Image (cartoon, rainbow over all chains, first blue to last red):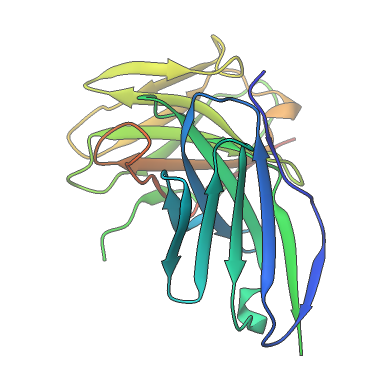
Length: 111
Length: 115
């Protein structure tokens, strides 16, 4: 059974700090990884995706992928209270189109 | 900015009744999806649809579920005889292409409450 694992949190960070969110996956065939943000009662909203080993930066967000360790992370720099949400990690295997989601990590950015 | 539109935002139904959830995908997208999220649980894939056919479905998507693209814009999910455990948020998504480098954009969701 293909799994994407995340710590459910909550992860609490002070405003302005770096938040680090982690995700592991079980399927070595997974090729692309997506980070979605979900506010309570709302739909998932894409933050960024990554498919190559290494880092990918977009504004305050950096995604990191290590395929050998089957590990994906998302760093949020200069965290803001508006970043408080649940962050969902998802993967897609090969040419397929099914997103497999983790349970999500709840992030709380405190003033 | 183009978006995926879902109606209704909230649907209340009695157990055993049929419901149809509606979605208008982004206009140039060719791949359509339904996901569901039971309260407090993870988002789960139900089905993907391309070229008027189901391309992939999960174990959840049993004979009670069906999808259809009745015209050039709408994409629907039908649940024939609702059960209490069908209560969830149902999200429609669409993408231009398939595979890991195509982004799936989600609609705002329909909250289905089965009483």
